[in-house]
Image 1 (tube, rainbow, N blue to C red):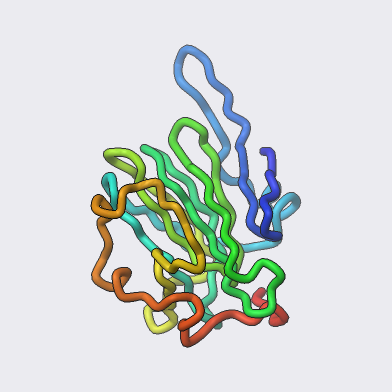
Image 2 (tube, rainbow, N blue to C red):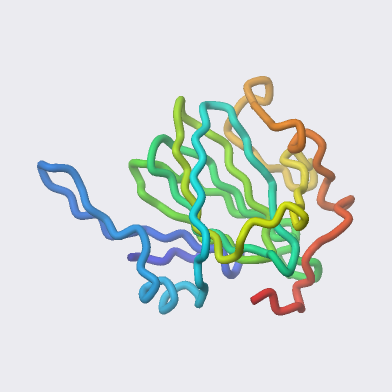
Length: 189
């Protein structure tokens, strides 16, 4: 696997080795040994999968400690624009984001460490999205920021009149108005 650094420390793109022939392809989507050696030491405890259609935007979500989560995300069908926003107060990249297209064709994965809000927009008719988490989901620990925060300026690659959001995601606060954020100087692991 190839680990590609981004402009935000800790957020990385992973490009697996893909072996193809006339039968199709084979790839190793995750190896604990390789991941812990090349990305960071984590222990994933929960795998999730969602299915969505064009225009769905999920995000920008996070979980507060003690249930903060790192995520390793990938697309097995279709394509999404995947976004990780640094929400660690005091971070030199606070309020900055990484956006990458993940698709069934490019096989890329994105690792989002604790301390980041995460979301994705569905760019194709049908998407199956998978993610590994290093902490269990805890509804009492949910947090979120607005997908359309003008201070972030994220281009989700979908016309605004075609976006499909949950009622909760329509009402999330802007980053500057969020009642709770991570502290850059706190050890989140």
